[in-house]
Amino acid sequence: MNTRITQLLGIEYPIIQGGMAWVAEHHLAAAVSEAGGLGLIGGANAPGEVVREEIRKAKKLTDKPIGVNVMLLSPHAEDVAKVIVEEGVKVVTTGAGNPEKYMEMWKAAGIKVIPVVASVALAKRMERYGADAVVAEGCESGGHIGEQTTMTLVPQVADAVSIPVIAAGGIGDGRGIAAAFMLGAEAVQIGTRFVVSKESIVHDNYKQRIIKAKDIDSAVTGRTHGHPVRSLRNQMTRQYVKLEEEGKSFEELEYLTLGTLRNAVLEGDVINGTVMAGQIAGMISKEQTCKEMIEEMMEQAGKLLGR
Ligand code: TUI
Image 1 (cartoon, rainbow, N blue to C red):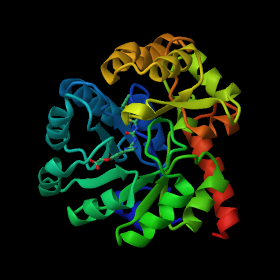
Image 2: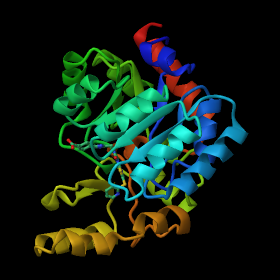
Image 3: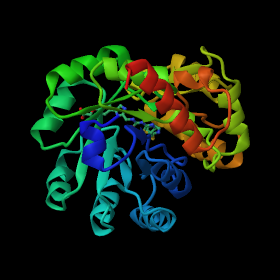
Image 4: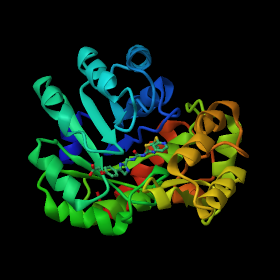
């Protein structure tokens, strides 16, 4: 499946991996790239130097292109933005904000810039600022989300911009990829399914929660303060919702969740930790290598699309 995205990025399959905080480290990114997709290092809240090391470690594991995701709410976003240029990274995606102020620097360095957007307005703005493509991410996704669903967002973004669109949110198999292509996407971004890959360093408790999850097992917290985040329901989401209903401030709620994603991912605390995952978790049933996942999905999508 040759598309403008596979050509732009020099990859075999139109699949990019989500830049998931704590999860998208060098082993996962290298495995996805080695399997023919585009692996990403997730900058998340990490300092620039930590991201630099991750980039270098990933490059030792693969000669294929890898990208970096800059989480724009991070206090280190600016440092990470510079490290990407210094390390000769070829592709950057951004999340949770507007990357305008870094675009000129990245473009001047010849970096392909792919902002993640949750609205048509931001997609159009990013095209004007020179973005090479956009990821249109629906609220089925795990983590920080917007309001639109993938089904409604992707075709509206595809109609509004001329640059290629990558669909994200709720995609975890070949049917999802085929559907995304029908909506006008030229590639997909996949997160939750790669969390349970064999190469993912995520604690087994976290993987098992995704594998055992049912369709209705995720919840969105933080809507009242304009920072909606989707995670699997547990003691943490229940506590958060309770405090949100009591009218606690954004700062108090932020304090409650401090370090809880790390605790879930690295320590396996799936009770009081934050287990970010998308709605597609209900369909994900086993651990496989990234290569097995990608080949299985591409075979299914190829049949459905008659390619
Ligand atoms: O960024 C994500 N997903 C994330 S970031 C993250 S780390 C975090 N943890 C706790 C709280 C907050 C962040 C976990 N998951 N996805 C990409 C994405 N970007 N989804 C939605 C957006 C988005 C939303 C609004 C992008 C831009 C935007 O508006 C920006 C503007 O200024 O117009």
